[in-house]
Amino acid sequence: MQPQYLVVLDAAHGGTDSGARLNDKLLEKDVTLALTLRLRGALAAKGIQVITTRDNDATVPLQTRAETANHALAEACITLHATGTGSGVHLFTSSLAPAPRMQFLPWRSAQAAYVTQSLRLSSEINAALAHVSIPVMLGRTSLQPMDSFACPAVAVEVANAGNVSLSDEGYQQKIVDALASALTQWKNDWRPQP
Image (tube, rainbow, N blue to C red; front, top):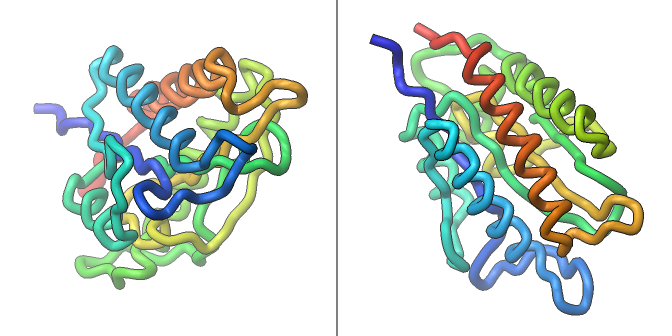
């Protein structure tokens, strides 16, 4: 029997943590939640099981986000952020050095055992975004809760694209469709680990 393919979506910020103020009316926590809910729907329509770390405007501690991802035994974890600087989408993987997978992973650096897979997942997302002409910047960073995720993980930070604002629903949908396409391709390429 084929193991269940599951994706965790982490809408950054929320509740008392508003994140960045993107303009006079737009907060990062609202954009990340909107993108997460849209992406959850797009993935569900493709038969992909999704768990979200938050599905409303709630404060969720970073450790709780990592616990949700790690208990789910996900095949991909996507943390969604938004920024008022730059253009297009910024993809970040952990800056931790790759490490061998062990039975017990150190909590704050569990991602080290998945860095190589995370870079492959980031490449899938990059290709899907490039296919729909969304500019992409690739980077590596230390970021919680991502560094504690025990699964392939990518932080996706969305920004305006030229004159197109993050508040534009068509632009948001274009990003969601590209992410759903990448995660569907990842499902096809994914190989369960022993």
